Image (tube, rainbow, N blue to C red; front, side, top):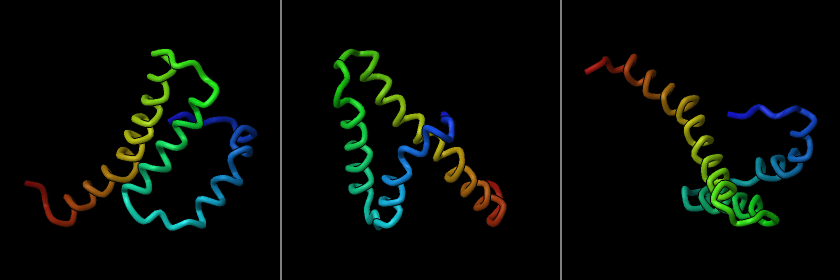
Length: 85
């Protein structure tokens, strides 16, 4: 996961604050938000393969990081609770 400089994070703080006050109720709503952000990223960029790839790679990389931090930890916890196979 890219850890950007805290000074660069500030420009997103209002957007993230607003999102934190919204109940994202479904996978579809989450996908809508992610896709919308990807569209915003592409708004002023050329539709070149490398740029489109960067956009999809960023989404994939975020999914990988979420899995590493949360899903894998949950699986490890379930294995400890219930025993391994």
